[in-house]
Figure 1: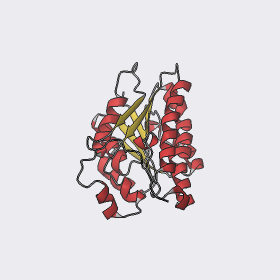
Figure 2: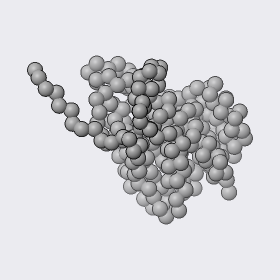
Figure 3: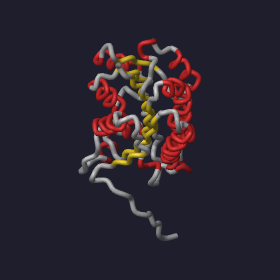
Length: 249
């Protein structure tokens, strides 16, 4: 039986790499994204086993439509990967553009909750799995990451609590929490500042989108009796920040 992956944020980075990894393994994939041109290009490249869906995670009412209108062939979802995420610019919260902060919350939390709720009946019926892309930012604070880190801490706790709610259903829930991964993520966060993005990864070896895709695939393909609760990973060259001390008046 062909298994089906539903993944959000498929048009770049971890999302695209994950779609490709599962397709290589014989799965079919439903992939969502906001950028129609990229979805079209990806669909042309990946072919028949890939079903593209144009959708914005902030449009909560539309997410129900997305699930209801899945073609019959792709409607039997076995795995949901909540990958789409948004990080606002790294301004101190007191100086930040509030609307950009709220956009991250709508994408990372509200949309994820609504989509998951719509897909749960099918996932329960098929004893499927849910993998949520959280972040080390949910565990370790850094300056400029107040809202983004909070959304990822929420996602980790949501994953653990959802697993509790789904006890006895056979549905597995995993929170994957990466550190530095070199994708378009920082370029988007810095609003197109390529120099800032390149500086962040200079003289170190970050993880790649393919690294995380392989990790997602590994977690998803464990035996049905085995649940990976949380999985935190960093590049070897990244470690934990020390405490910041401000001195002077």
